[in-house]
Image 1: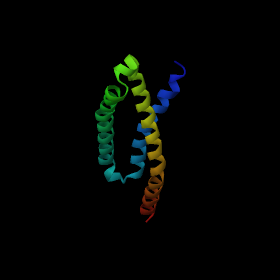
Image 2: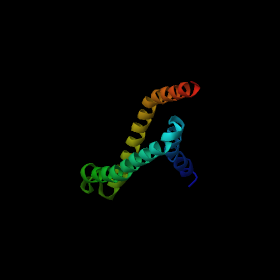
Image 3: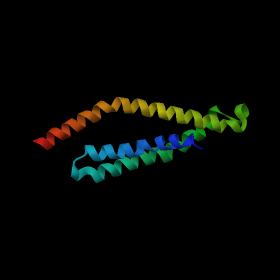
Image 4: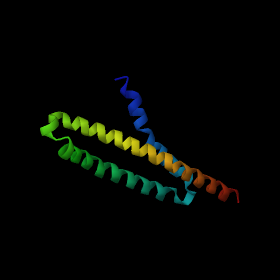
Length: 111
């Protein structure tokens, strides 16, 4: 149980960081709309694609014939690792754009 506490804590961070960065980046009159769009897109991806991809992995790759009841374990493992790698790469790629947006916002506020 002690080993899973940091994992759960760290897994909850991206959602909060995304929402906070949107609040920081947007002008005051657009913050509510930007947050609503962010939450819509994230929830649609999480709730629509997550279970679908997991089921497809279990049905077509980690089948009952080859893996038995352990197939879902490997599906969860592969989906989680792949999602985290993709998330890390996207975060790394988008950090420059985030910095540019923050610099633009600061210049706009200063003028």
